[in-house]
Length: 109
Image 1 (cartoon, rainbow, N blue to C red):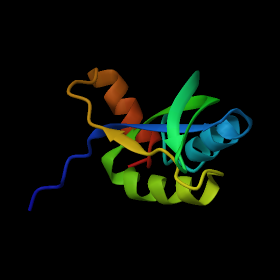
Image 2: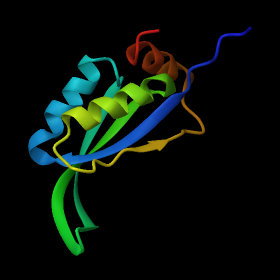
Image 3: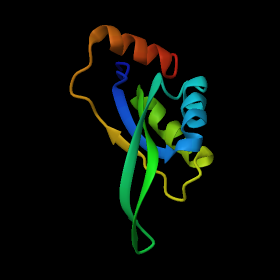
Image 4: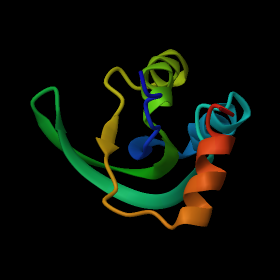
């Protein structure tokens, strides 16, 4: 039986400005992510029947598909939101050298 190939994955997570750095650092230190980029954003959303806007940080997490279940679990444990954003994107192309680094850094396999 052939070994399953690991695939690169991008995960979007929004977080309060006060917790974004600690979330990003924990995910990388625990090897659940190879890299987490932080982008300041203003989000407008519906919550508990009201439309509201907040300044947040969008975490763009670069990881591999085999890390996603543990990554989602860890985000649920660490995140302060009742319903944290966790959106998985499947890239159609990734540069070979970046892919090799990403797969080594996320999970270390």
